[in-house]
Structures are given as structure tokens and as C-alpha cells.
Image 1 (cartoon, helix red, strand yellow):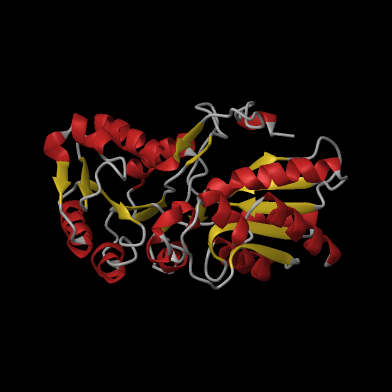
Image 2 (image 1 turned 180 degrees about the horizontal axis):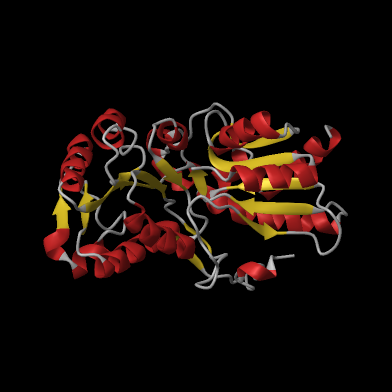
Amino acid sequence: MLNPQLKLNTKIFNSDVEQVPIRRGFGEGLAKAGETDENVVALCADLTESTQMHFFKEKFKERFIQIGVAEQNLVTVASGMAAMGKVPFCSSYAMFSPGRNWEQIRTTIAYNDRPVKIVGSHAGISVGPDGGTHQALEDISIMRAIPNMEVLSPCDAVEAKKITQLLAKSGKPAYLRLAREKTPIMTTDETPTEIGKSQIFWLPDVGVAQVGIVATGALLFQSIMAAKELESEGIKIKVMNLATIKPIDVEGIVTLARETKAIVTVEEHQVMGGMGSAVAEVLAQNFPVPVEFIGVQDKFGQSGTPVELIEHYGMDKNSIKEAVKNVLKRK
């Protein structure tokens, strides 16, 4: 069942569940952050509407800077503004930022511990027909490896809006990962959100869970759908929303592993170095259990519809169910 304490969207299982792009939540959250703090500024690399920064631009034109197609310049200008007391959010496609400008992010932002927020939109395989050159599948791994950098991947637009406002107050460098396509709304305005804390979205009606699914981003929805169907087959599941990949919630992950003794990680990203690897690092150091990894298996993306690609790369509901059954055999 859905965790009643989190006040989640009760219409999540309806065929007409509301779907909104996660990136829109960021745009709305940035505009709200701008209302709260006049030091919040926005910089974009010629993708204002695509990354949904137009919400901020329309309200605070004097605090919006169009850098143009120059992603390395984008983050170094943002770093300079942060040094002068501003709270910069800089956005582009994830393939270009942090994909193209990683060294500048590392040296000018993270090395100096400046509170710049790097927003990578259109991440993952679900970018669809744009193809492998524009499908960022390595961004979590390259960003979580940088010291001082926080890494976040919200599950829906509502959570993205809240996280954006929290990042404006965090005082730390951060990477915010966003998806392009419309995805189901799973949370509500009343669902609690905290940087660095995981949440159990799905849990058994009665009894102890046999497997824990740890998911990040929009694939949390597929994970909940899988858990619901597995319950009807007699397999009890807990599903964790891991929106903050760094700093990772060690206590929450270890607690889930101690209960279930088996974990499946789910992410729209390369399995190597991504969220699943981060979870495995926690478990190896604290409470080793069998782990199955759902994600892209050391391959590049390709053109297709988002639904086709999620299924082709083994990240859909049925693939998650199969991974759960496989990890059960390893307990």
C-alpha cells in the first residue's frame, strides 16, 4: 500500500493520473525561490523554455542572464556571481551541463565550495527521439564523484518544485537532474521533502517486506507499479524514493536492507557509477546483501519513443518484477 504518512497522490493508480514534466516543477520552484530571496539569479545556455527557466525570466527579467550556447562560460560566470553573494541556478541539457563543462564545474564551483546549482534537464533515455548523443546516462556518476557536490533526482514535478526551493537555501554546490517527458504525479504539496533523507513510498499491508526497491527519478512510478503487482503474487515489497543521491541516506538504506535482506536499485542511468553503485557502496560498508541493478547496462542510447526505450533497455515494470524475483533467489 502507499505509505499513508507521506500523503501521496491517491490517484496514482488511475489511468488518468495527472502527468507533468519534472522540469516544469523546477521552473515553478525557481520562480518561488526568486520571490523569497532577491539574491537568487538564473543563467541559461540558450534553452530558456526547454529548461523551464522562462517562469523565472518572466518575473525577474533583471536577474536572468542568457549566456548563449557556451556551457563552460555558463558555470564560470555563475561561480563568479556566487563568490559575490548571489545564489545562481544555471540550466542546460544534462548532456551539455554537466556533460560538456564538467572540469569548470569541478574547479571553479566545487573546489571553491560555491553555492551554484547546476540543473541538467532532458536527462536519461526518455529524451526519446533525440537519440544517443543527447541522452545523458552518465551524469549522476560524474557529479557524485566531485567533492562538495550534492546530487538530487526528484521523482515528479511536485517534488522538483520543493527541492528547487530547498536548494536555494542550502548554501552548497548541487546538481539537480530533470527529465523531459510528462511523468505521473506521485507526491502532493503535503508530502514531506528533505535533502539527504529517503522515504518509503510503498510498504506491505501486513508483515515484513521480502525485497526493498530503491528508486530515483521518474522510474519510481514503474517501481511502485511493480510492487503493487508483486503483492498480488504474494511477494511483499518496500519501495524507497531516493531523491538525494548525495549526501546519501546511509541510515535509511541500511534499515531497509536489514529488514528485507535483498535490494533492487532502479534508475534511468548507467548502472555503473550511478545511484545503484552508491547504494551498493553503502551496503558493502554496513550491511552486505544481494543486489540487482536496473538501469542501462553499459550501452549508449538510441532514438525511439520513451516507452519503447524504457522497455528495450530493461527498466520497465516487468523488468523490475523479474529483478525482484532474481534477487529473492539469492537470499
